[in-house]
Image (tube, rainbow, N blue to C red; front, side):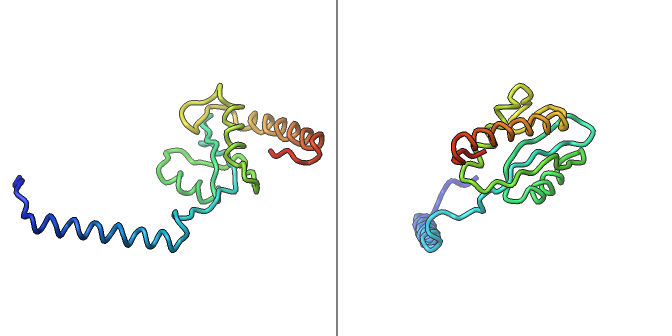
Length: 142
């Protein structure tokens, strides 16, 4: 490996890099700063068919997320439930589900539980949230 670098080539490469940074900054500024990603609008639970492996996550479109995950997964995946969520606290709601199922956590967003039992648990969470919303005068979110 030749460590010798022509100083003119180094200077030219540095100018090119600075120009690229300047152009990227101009593009970001024209977009209003950071690149805007779609805001997740669905909390989903999916299951690896024939197993107790489940993933609790958020996505803009749970069906598309399922398709992406299925490509690299050895089991057929199916959506246990999809919860449309239009509030700003979607990640808090997802964390609430993760916390509820914490004893079943395998790693990250993957859990080991019976999906049908989870649906019963979810009904209980929704009932408590509706009761709390009613008691708070409609100001509490899920």
